[in-house]
Image 1: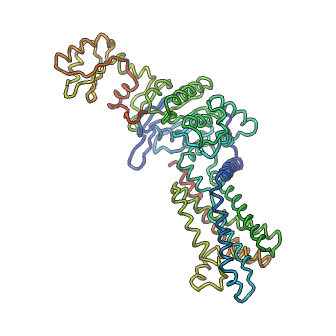
Image 2 (image 1 turned 90 degrees about the vertical axis):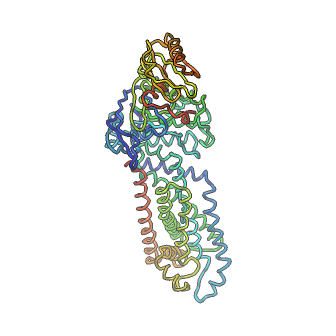
Image 3 (image 1 turned 120 degrees about the vertical axis):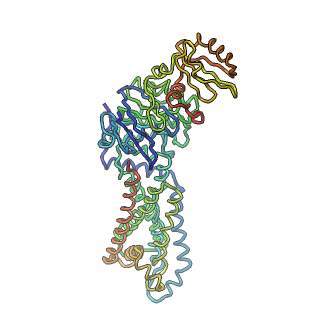
Length: 259
Length: 311
């Protein structure tokens, strides 16, 4: 009599997530750049632009203005897609596929690990903000909302690298997928407020969901609770998440199809 | 059991109508060279690949219609023993067990039990990246056994292993079959492996099953004795001329090699040498032996397993 029985979706998810988290802890090389890049840009942007930005009319706290940008730099594109590619290339994915594991849990489990990581990265950047004197007008709950919104963005963006990983099974292609980060992160209000952008960049920024994410995050830091900004930020994250998750799960379906 | 199982990739038919019937509790050796269709067949039986046409059942369940139920009943060790190198052997086994619904003490005890079957020692708590090829195979085998499968698929379990590790895997496979009574479907490109392990052997070539039976039955089909004559360069003789000799049951020629089957090879040797000498046919070597699976393969396919495949 076999000992095997279906473990249930939650069981599969927990099992896959546990492995992804463990592998994360064993790959500090994957975490260190994700942490150093935002810290570096935060320091350089403030050093280069703070005086200039704050000299313009209006009351701009540039350190607070830049904190959400550091968060976006920290969490955008962070994923376990390279682990997935390694699994595809080594054949370990096939080993998992001959078990009764639910196919969606194979991807969602990795995304759980991603969410934990981006939450940790966001928290560290927020601590950095506190250290340099940034304070949240929305209070402690606002800090929590800020972290969850940032992490939700990081999670939503993981769909891109997972799609590339599942479609190509190629680590170089997954690394190249990082390029998609640039238009999202730079064709927006990363460095200056919308009204200070040139007209062409302003037009592009209007269509960039990161613009609304940054506005929502900035409102939590500098303006307290602004429902309109938060709703637009949530809608942007949700919209991107819907697109990237649809792409990633349809790619998973193709990858595991037996036909 | 498979019925006219076929699988194409584009215009190429990798498996071209295979009928198999494997009895519960037996070790079935699926023998063939690289590219013969062994792994494609196994991937279909393991639910990783759908057949283009035909059908297959494993443990009584259809591999397409009841794929999820099949997965609960099979254990699989695929080629190359792909494991996550960043995890320890024990973590791999724990993950595997959890995916089969095991947890807590049941899982812990079961891991201890399967570790009794494979010789891995304290290395089980080291990361897989530090393992030798043989150790990876053994952990892979242990993970395939964890949930007590009814059918165990071993896809080329010893390819790439050194002779000592290969022998160790053979011992373990035999022990599993004997002690646990698990049905084992084993693919191999090694004739000796099929001969040593399998109760029955199916020979696949170019996607088709070309011979099937116990190793002894298959060898008997070639003849009880075999005299293999290697001709000198330039020497030629029509096989039909030797078939007329008393005691010869069959003659086949493959390049410079003549294989002469007989019920009594020892009695035939002198007549054969005389016959070749009288016709002025130069002989480089002459060997009397009992047939091997290699001879069976040669008789069934017209060619030997590519020596490049052998290690």
